Amino acid sequence: MPIVINLDVELAKKKMSVADFAAAIDITPANVSVLKNGRAKAVRFSTLDAICRVLECQPGDIFRWVPEDTAATEAKSTVTGA
Image 1 (tube, rainbow, N blue to C red):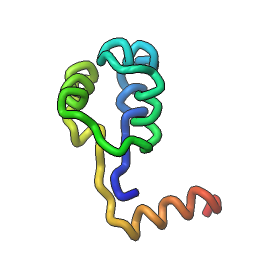
Image 2: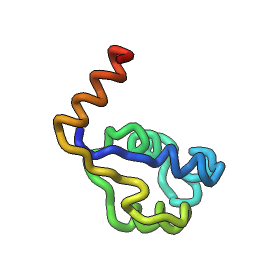
Image 3: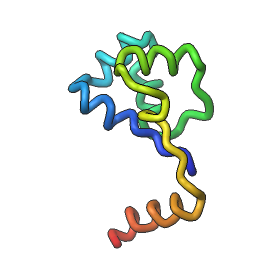
């Protein structure tokens, strides 16, 4: 997937647990996990607003687009350890 989710990085910067974050933005920890692991198909703007408000960041700090060939190369090197 060419959209990379950096939610775990932003959570680590704020030293915030998934449970605390989920409570702060009013979604379930399971849904935070879905977002964090890049399995979400969509994100509501109200949820994105809450994420940015709680983490004091911009949407671009959470989401990053990478070209398809770069994403495939990154995924391949992660799997093969190259």
